[in-house]
Image (cartoon, rainbow, N blue to C red):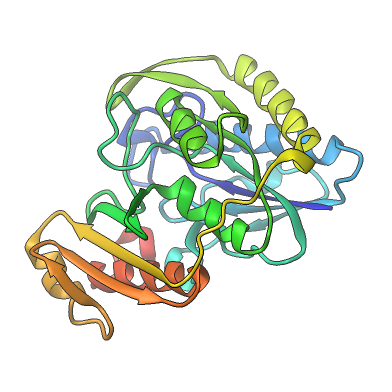
Length: 282
């Protein structure tokens, strides 16, 4: 069995502020190290499980060139490179060859109370994403990609609020590790890397042991997606994309027959709305 890891940064150990999140931030180098530490812990634990033959890791944060490949153990592959070169964003490279998905360093959806750096996909553009009428964050968006292939999410690491969101969508029994608890939107009470390393490794092993009991998170078609933007002019721009229907002053909607087609169009619409590629799309 092969395991797929979709990783983000905002939900990683010790990450609390924008200065850690991108190349222009003075603390970005340490942010990359902290993210890579959590990913390595998950990957090594997965590879230690007897039925796992390999791990593919998708770097799903910002420029999507954050994980330090030289730190990854043998048996791993890394999907790296900007979202402008992808169609599945944080799950690029997922296919029928995987038996389990792990979500490492993911965060709570936009608008979540008592969460560290909550947002959905692109915080500067997107206020809310609804799928068949239900508000989705990034964890649900990615879990449903795995679900389309009949594959469950067996482990999630995040902050306390993100772990609660994971249980809301994936079931109360999904294995989670909370690496921090918000003290504000850009501050947290954080566990140390030594502690979260141990907890992530144990949680991944327990999650893989639970694999036969986990059900995929499936979104049945046809699938209606509504994307609500922060500003009216963003919806004006996005509305020029063929097939997008204006359903509110800040909102665009569309329908596709399958979830995979819908999630691809969702990301394409956000990229279209962004216009000239900002740093995170280059």
